[in-house]
Image 1 (cartoon, rainbow, N blue to C red):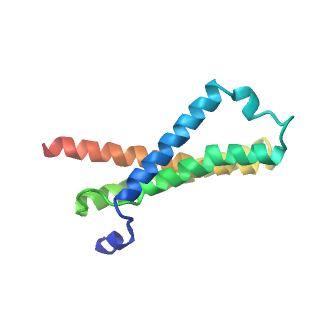
Image 2: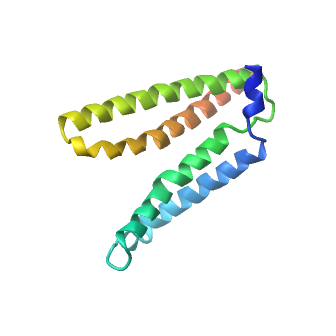
Length: 145
């Protein structure tokens, strides 16, 4: 476990990840409420540009933000924080296996050509890992006081 500390990013990457997540959330809310008609409209731009927008907004920004938040160091990096990180990543692994299994069953039973839906697995898993990690940090800090 001690060797894992060598692979963690410095603490300021956590703030970069939070910034990316806030930008993603603000852009998502703006698109949903202000420009939902123009954002997905392919009449004035090509379908490739629209898919690039959707991919950037729904996949790349949250994935990069979550990864930066999850693999950066804590203020106090000790054995307990490494154990919490490993527990949350284990639960994330269980979630991604479950999502993959459900999507596999869905694609076999209903539509074999819908296998591309598995791209939803990584952002969902990182979101679960992010939430579980912060919940475990909150829970243990509450019992320490």
